[in-house]
Image 1 (cartoon, rainbow, N blue to C red):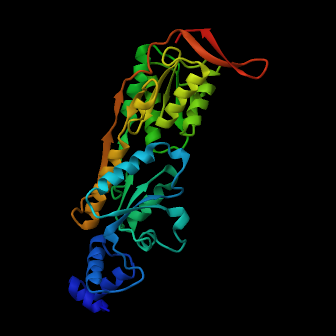
Image 2 (image 1 turned 90 degrees about the horizontal axis):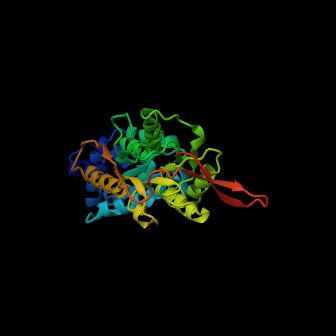
Image 3 (image 1 turned 45 degrees about the horizontal axis):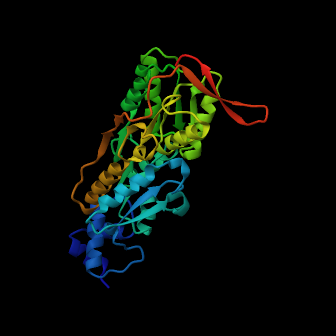
Length: 356
């Protein structure tokens, strides 16, 4: 078996640096570590934690991997990651850091134990420190769907503030004055953008912000349907609602169908879309649109180049969204749908004459 000195001579690197690289010590750049490991493999060096790190990347979640609160974004993201792998001879694994990382391990040690050469990280408000810690350990990583002021954290994301503002302004221009918001209760950069866009549009058009019209929801079918039921049950219900998640938007449309609420005649809806979900609804919904698949593709392409040494340039890319008008918005009819309980405790649809 090759010795550390032979590896050092083969790689043209000092024995001390080779030793640090093989034993997963800090202060070794990813490029140097890859060079050491490549020489070690070429010389037949055997060590338990020696892995072909350039052959595997991870889509890593700080906590749970699959959760309804993540909505439809992650399916589209994964599709983009797989597309990004393309012709590259690179494998993908999906990791839960909270579940699998040992307390005494650094993040870099954990990923190398898993045979991972680079990480695409899904970051949320309660786990942003994980991204910064991984960056501090100089392990190749890029965050998707979040952005950082820290110039050393690589990320690719979208900013939906302007198009969320544009979506609400579209409703205002149609004549709506009471506009609800169904917002994902897991706050992250994306949903803060959408919330601020909603508030800004109301303020710019002299409409009072009413907290009772803002509903925190789980981003799934039931969450969207229950949001519609809640808002229509208010004593002064909205004539339009903006949803910040595609699956919840589908749930809202289904909920309206079940309640006999016509969309958009009785209630206008605007949703959010990460792929092409809007075209699978009946009717196809007006939406603020982002391409989650493109985020995954771009993150993967950059990470593979970073691991292979093709680029040492950082990446902090904010992609635009777009606003697309389809068939779920119209001028208010002047009659607001409201759900009330009858004497038997059952839901009934009631139409009150009122201005939009």
